[in-house]
Image (tube, rainbow, N blue to C red; front, side):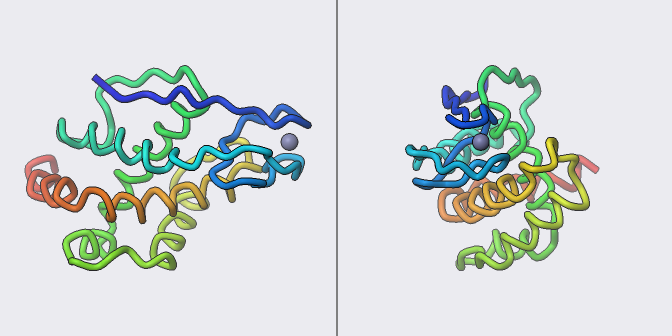
Length: 157
Ligand SMILES: [Zn+2]
């Protein structure tokens, strides 16, 4: 089982598929401002990722992409899988504090530019911002799940 997203959005002007997280977010392709925002999308992404993690990994065994939201979820699962394996993020996940925005931004930037293949190119900044928000929300929402994964990881290697 996996939790999917029914969010689909296309830029009114150029038709680019992306998800505005805040009102008047600019289209990554043409800059047109989105008149609506999916303000709970980051939260629902984290909920779906934590659901996967309750079965042992942020990465689901099987995933089907049916909406733009699903493709964002899929990208976020991969990002979280990567990010929570970075020592500083792991340490922060185990502490009582929050993940500082600058740490989240740096890990997301590293991932988007040096680890993942993010396609098309114009969506890179948009995805970097999304990943950064997801990582901060993950810590706010699901500390105990992250700790649980850590205990499992040595045997996975
Ligand atoms: Zn556009």
